[in-house]
Length: 151
Image (cartoon, rainbow, N blue to C red; front, side, top):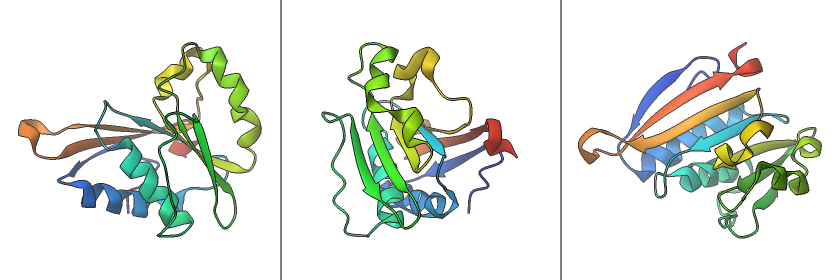
């Protein structure tokens, strides 16, 4: 199980490994946690988010991409999960309409394209960066805790 208090780099050879990582991360998350999912198109951000959501809700949970709705919410046992795709934001201030600060009290936030938050981003977060591994051998994942995640 990845230690969320320490920076680490992992190799994911295929989508099954990405799903397994999501299943191992999910039980460690709690209300108020923020997970930034970084990576280019097709790097596995949505697959990782989907695995986390299905682990915390139901293995058959329908998890559509929030690309057009910007946010989808799901009920876990003890909190809500808000899955966000901020790719379409044109300015950080557009995020105010999503009510992220209010949702923190009762939700885990899984945020794809978090750089769109700009100066409105969060200090207490877990960064997960997905990128191509050397010679197209799957994905390299870097997990970096910030703020309260480091304690």
